[in-house]
Image (cartoon, rainbow, N blue to C red; front, side):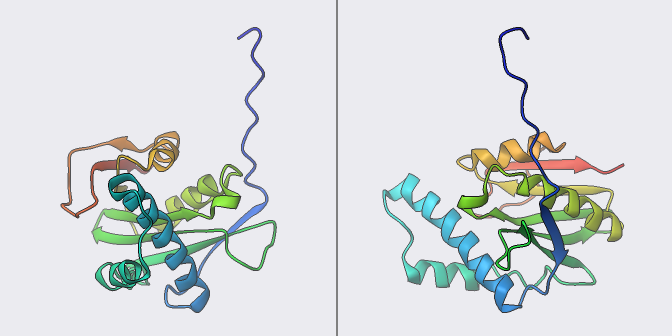
Length: 177
């Protein structure tokens, strides 16, 4: 369109994504950061406060990530510009012969908008293919608008509910090639 600047593509070349055991201390620290982020957003929206340390510990116990392990799953960590500390994560678990579920997608706030989400979702597609999945599904919340937008940009579309988790408000799926 005349008068509008071209959209700058999001760089993914500076991101590296690799599988890591979900119980590795680096992975568990990132999972905790993920949970604090989404819990704080939830409690801010509904109660005007952040999550308490006790609520975070309880959620970690109630929603374990131990199913994001081979041979039925994978946990991916993303590093930006070769940094030691991971800047993001995503998990994938097989639901059935042809379906995998995307879980725990997170980019640290200071690294958002730099293409890490796209790099993770590209790696998720490859991991799902390696698991033999033909479809990836996910559930998320209405208030996680950035996540829903990321998923839509990467081919996910809203579908009928397939789970009944306490925080599932939007269900999405992507068919793989």
